[in-house]
Image (cartoon, rainbow, N blue to C red):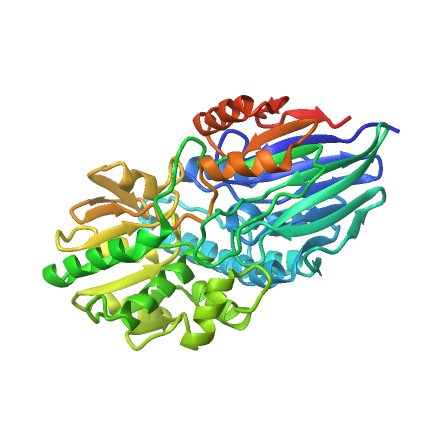
Amino acid sequence: MSNPKISFHGAAGEVTGSRHLLQTESGALLLDCGMFQGHRNDAERKNREFSFPPASVDAVLLSHGHIDHCGLLPSLYRDGCAGPLYATRGTAEIAGIMLADSARLQESDAKFYNKVHAAENLTIEPLYREEDALLALSHLQPEDYNKDFAPLPGVTARFLNSGHVLGAALTQLDIDTSGGRRRLLYTGDLGRREGLLMESPAAPKDVDYLVVETTYGGRTHEKISDAGAKLGEVIRRAVKSGGKIIVPSFALERTQEIVFILDRLFREKAIPEIPVYVDSPMAISLTEIFNKRRDDFSFDDKFKAYARMDGDPFGFDYIRYLRETDESKAINNKKGPMLIISASGMCEGGRVLHHLRNNIGGEENIVLLVGYQAQGTLGRRLQEGQKKVKIFGLEHEVVASIETMHFFSSHADHGDIVSFVRNASPARGVFLVHGDNEARAAIAEALAKEGIRNIKSPEMGETFDLD
């Protein structure tokens, strides 16, 4: 029997685009199939082609529904993959919304970009279309948490709570090798020990190999319990200046976290009563899933108790959820103060780009960044203080205040990651992924001090034997 191999085709030395390929005697398993999110030229190069034949993939295991983990599934299945797509039931439901919306946004953004640049004969094409997303989703096979299933002969899989977002899972794989049974654990994105909505993750035992994300290696999050006070302070400033607060937000989890905090602040009468708009059809559909599943296994008990007491933890008198394009356009013509939550979280697509281009030139306005901003994204350029940025290829002067809140990350920070790896006690090796090289180096150093050996920071395309 030949030993299985694992190779890394995304999120190796960078934060987005997770794609890890496990090859065994009985076939090939793909762990996530994420979209790279960054500068348009880099994204085009990294997302247009796969570094392995899609038709060679026999099954896909999806950790959760964020686009940087699932966003290239439509391309994978369009280009030849015909295997089953395994996910938890929560992730399966969420991915259906995320992928269809991603396809529609790409088509819409391409149409708008091509219109704006028609005189220059500049055009772009969407990565995939809605029919490709539907093709991928037709292969979904939902699985329960904590239940064994067999994606390939000789491989037993189990989804465990990762604490990251609703439906997110650690993927545990028990694999037949020439040296006996080996256990590989893939974290996907790892949740925090102190979260707002999700139950914190627990590391399983008897792990041989661990593939762990390192997004926030070397960094410590601010306490999530302080987020309400900071958000309230920003809202009071906007009320005083009459400005708009533009919140580029991930539709999955981040939007629901912010709305939940606003719900508590309004209930406690801790902030002025201003209009709040959630301007993202995808975020609205996802919030409906959160409400429907608020007794789900992966939710924290404290959130469940609040939801039972409140009755509607994602709704209050001053919030409006906007689905229609005309509604979205209309709020650009309204005066502040107001708070607009809109996707995408890194300012790389979607309706938030229209709100930014209409409001970034007003000194009374605030752009509030509430999540990780990858290198090369518009969000990172704003965060770094660039005074001129391009939106839809047109240059805009940045006059609005740009602020970042670090409370909201649903990713484990440095201490969370080290604690998780220590508890998992991987016996044969650790692969550090989904982090830049500086973050990975910080985690590697900390793990070495814990006495953990055989720590690898894979390069793109690198392959390792699992003996």
